[in-house]
Amino acid sequence: MLEEGLPLSLRLFRDIHRVLLRKGRGSGQTPGEFRHSQNWIGGTRPGNAAFVPPPADEVLDCMAKLELFLHDQPEPTPVLLKAALVHVQFETIHPFLDGNGRVGRLLIALLLYEQKVLRKPMLFLSLYFKTHRQYYYELLNNVRITGDWEAWLDFFADAVIVTATQAVETAQRLLDLSNRDRETISRLGRAAASAAEVHRALMEHPIATSRSLVEKTGITPATVNKALGHLERLSIVKERTAQKRNRLYSYGEYIRIMNEGTELPR
Image (tube, rainbow, N blue to C red; front, side, top):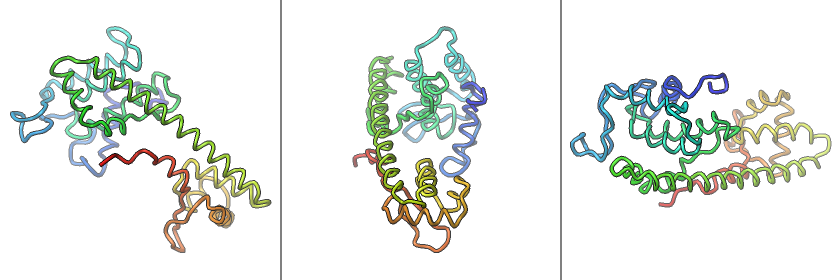
């Protein structure tokens, strides 16, 4: 929607929320609608809650002001600073009955993408926030209670630096892996061309069925299956189901690199 020209807006927030809560956790919490009742964080009621967001009848006004800030009204704000401030304000308004944390974290990437800081919306700070969850919540609360924006901005800047560095390192390792595997595939002789096409498709979708690979590559089912056989023998892909039909293949080393560091300490 951003690529089609829709700006970051209340409409986009609601549409994101509608998709997010379409099924699974929170699907019964009015997907795509700002809340019409009071919510709170922690405790059993607003009277003993850790934090109580604005009343429901003030949500739309609060969100409208946040939308203006996103579009540099009353004055421009540097984009990383803006992303940090918007995240706190969104979580403080808590405009939805459920899914506020997920939408609020996603907005960081979307804002950086819309403002051309990222060519793709792929800088996700969620894992850093989750790894430092308790401190993250303390910082949000301290902004609300004492106005300590500086500590939050320091934390946010560290999150960007660490996450961006990890993303660059991961991208380089994935590039090195794909180059090594392409070199191995090139030695297959006549089968190399079709195997290389399947390999390219697996780099975009490292878990795939033979049918999805046929659709992605435009190669015949028989040729795709032969290519997968070659890639299995080269230990590049692995069949996960041990079935005759609807087999699922994974580009194991690619997935391992992507997953590295995502397991949180217990």
